[in-house]
Length: 211
Image (cartoon, rainbow, N blue to C red; front, side):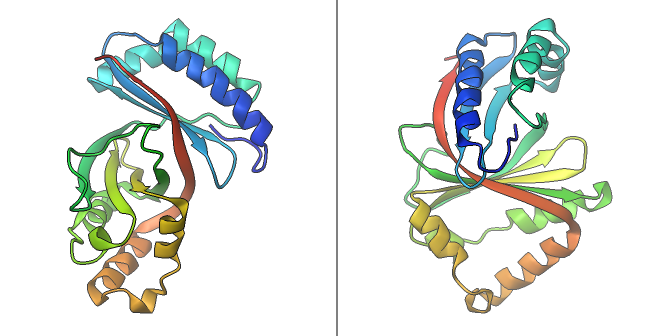
């Protein structure tokens, strides 16, 4: 959900409305929801897991979801539903147990959406998922990154976790000419495959699961 770039008051109001929806959710097939507050540009992201795509579509077509969209529409400048499947998870050697999306760990999270032609989606995923143990995984503050495949064929999401804002920006401040050659080459191929991209940074502020 998007807002005017610096509408932080609107973000707080929107977070309250979405949190209410997260706490009330209990539809068939629902597994978990994690509410994210944007940090770079105002906005809200809610990552929701469901058992199957059919469960998700049944919910989106139902009256409860339509009522929710009406409630949020007065605050958000845009509300987009992206349906994606997790295809890769990588994490730092010190991080065990997979990706943990929780407010208790206070990750600095970046979410990048890369828009791609359907015929190039598999190639882009391949560039984003090959192991980088010798470099990214050993950088100070790196925790994990997960790649999600857009089921409509038009996008790929990179969901990355860092232990702090400082660690995240320290990584991005490293000049590309100092990166390993194979990483630079892979990044260049990914750029050529990407039609456009957008990103924001977040902190997880609330999560709930069916367990």
